[in-house]
Image (cartoon, rainbow, N blue to C red; front, side, top):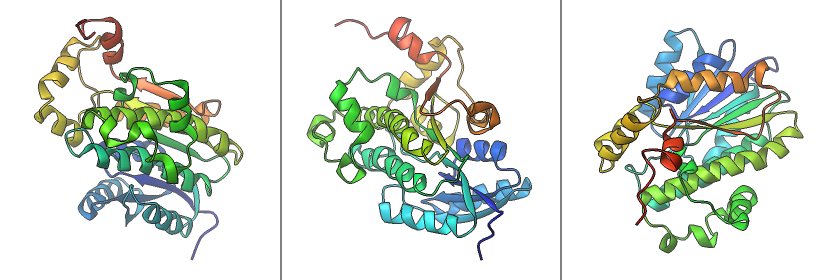
Amino acid sequence: MKSSSKKVIVLIGAGSIGIAIARRVGAGKHIVIADIKQESNQVAANILNDAGFETSISLVDLSSKTSLQELVKTATGIGDITGLIIAAGLSPSQASPQKILEVDLYGTAVALEEFGNVISQGGTAIVIASQSGHRLPALTSDENEALAVTPTKDLLSLPFLQLEKIRDSLHAYQLAKRGNSLRTMSEAIRWGKRGARVNCISPGIIITPLANDELAGPRGDMYRNMIQTSPVGRAGTPDEVASLAELLMGDAGTFITGSDFLMDGGVTASYWYGDLKPKAQ
């Protein structure tokens, strides 16, 4: 039976960054942990339960609208949804361009849409994007608007997202993460009508299992060079991302919505203006 006083935070993606954020903002709330892998759900639940949090777990496929609608139904059956953390996704070394667009781009857009229909007044959301979205060359104004406002059912049909236009998985990932940022801005208008806020964080290389996959993958040398030549000179930690998310989801962040925060140790700055700048052909 639903308790009207129970506040619910939904965590989509049971990885290190999502868990770190949930620990910062989940005290006194019920955390619904949702991942495509049951073992990942259970690991996250064990960590949070052992730290004193109240949790439940639910399987979700971020690329499926039906699955996300079922998650909304499950969460609203527990209480009022006051927070959403979208921290699921696939890296370029983990999936094909098509799958990355389905999960990282379409799935995030659908999650914002579906949870935006039920988010409580005063509620907040965080989307975890990536620095990669900031290294994609400028799109046209029409392409930006299309990523921001195209109905989700038509999103993957956009001409510039067709597979013959996508160079590789990294290009798909960059487009997806640029889309996350633009969709966050667009959804902030709709969420604001419910008295709720949504923001995006674009982390750089944060040491997580996903990042370790990248470091061990075909682009590993490139990522190590990015770390070594960046202004900060190191990778980040999930707790550092969680510190920013805590600000954005808390009372101190109530004037912030529709924004994308790049936190990458200066890698993007170095890419455009420093030692990482691509050599002219």
